[in-house]
Image (cartoon, rainbow, N blue to C red; front, side, top):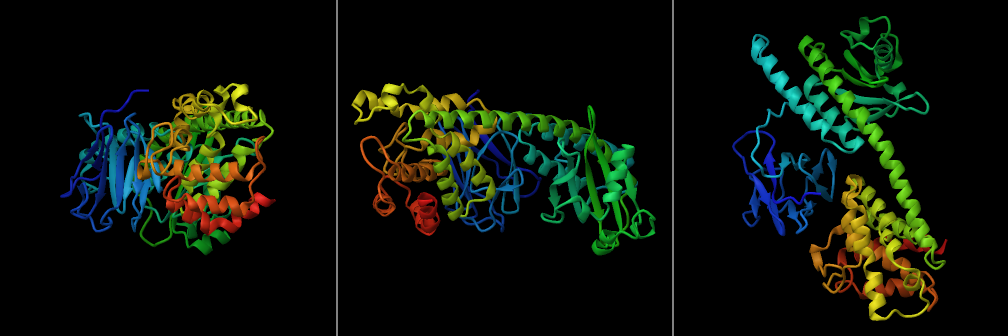
Length: 481
């Protein structure tokens, strides 16, 4: 995996504020409105110190929300901390950045919205083509299915300017259509709530774009309860056609009386859907393989735990505790998902630790201690080439770092330790203390809690211990059941 030499934030939209923010290995920059920030962005929606962009020595890049008012969003999902790759879209408040490696390159216009007069036919065609190519290249770069779905739907919103929209995918197991990405969020929970599910099903059956110009005048729709309740005026459904047939549909409607969809919007949406379908079909296959591979790795991690009867179930318990702590810290769902993956795999490197060390029923000597400590780097090296686990890597490598800098393997201290690793350190220690070992019994929960609090600011991040205090009752219940 190539090590990045530079990583840059570039404003997604041209304007008076064209601040380009770049970091190199070992460098961090605080971004915000304050003149004390390393990178000052004069944008009202940003907090004084909004976020920190960091590049580690190995070239990995993270962005961390510094407690901002309006949040940090990566590829449309709010995150407290996220690992970035070139091509990700990062929004700080209302200000959107594109990311790249800092190398000079030719780019097409963003294409999120093409504004033109009806008479500008030649200009419109060229702009639409360039936007379509740009969008196609962008969506093909997405590795995770949900991120791709959200990006595709955001593009559809910009093309059609609907009041509501959704991507529905066909469940391969049941054949049912399921909403997988919805705008505005929560507008639909199932297909029966769609104002024009009839239009969606008909477009899939005919494999053609179906446009409803006036829902009240259309005999297929005017008596539908969902149409009446939603007040739908016009709707469009574009089938997503994969290599073996339909895989789903793009759907959009307008509830306000502002006219139907223009012919040019419909043509562009149809062309866009063809590109999106190819990317989504590939992403679905990748997602299925990724899920299978992740389950295989988690099974391996459980098997490693089971080598020692004293640590059986350790990874699952640590995962549960870590997710509770992340929730208590109000981390967004995306962060909690990464914490879950990291928890299940945090000790996978113990596969490289021999039994005579791992299962020794007495204190380890210095040489044996060095062997057992190597499990964090062994795990990191095992997983580092897997793109779908890249955000979990800091916790796998860093869950034995200490707040005071006396941990391993990199002797990081304080905020230089990744947030996920700081959370995992508390969860891991909690389970270690409350589980029996060959050389001691399980500590009472009261004593384990006392030790955690006593080591806040030395071994543990004080903020994570505060989260432990808030969630203590829930954690106690998990330990004693």
